[in-house]
Length: 169
Image (tube, rainbow, N blue to C red; front, side, top):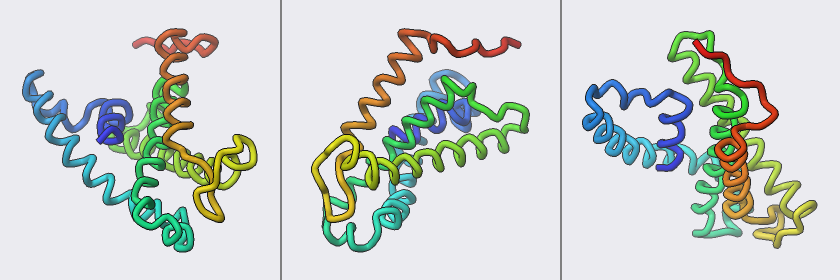
């Protein structure tokens, strides 16, 4: 559900919830909508996560494999927050559906790349995290949550220091 909140809040500029009208209806629509959307995202990401892990790792993880959907999700959330706040939520010259689709696809692909890189290269080889299976190491929930926290610190507390300010309309 966190993914749904971040996707709709950052990447789609609160669409479709903002169509509900008054602030109270928008809040109700976003609450109910994000519960439903978040549940759908979980069931959509679960087979993708299993594909990225591979059948041998899914079998070795057993029931714990389902938690890797959240680990892919946190990699995606990291890129959504970074994309909106440090890369000006590009592209911005397209019609709304094109903008939203491009942002979702770009950040999802970056999240998938981060997930793969983290588990197959960084966690064991660089961070020396313990192995989860014969082929993957680490726990992205801990590491990537820390990255999200530092990104938010940079964006909120340091006001994206060093990056050009977005153009105002």
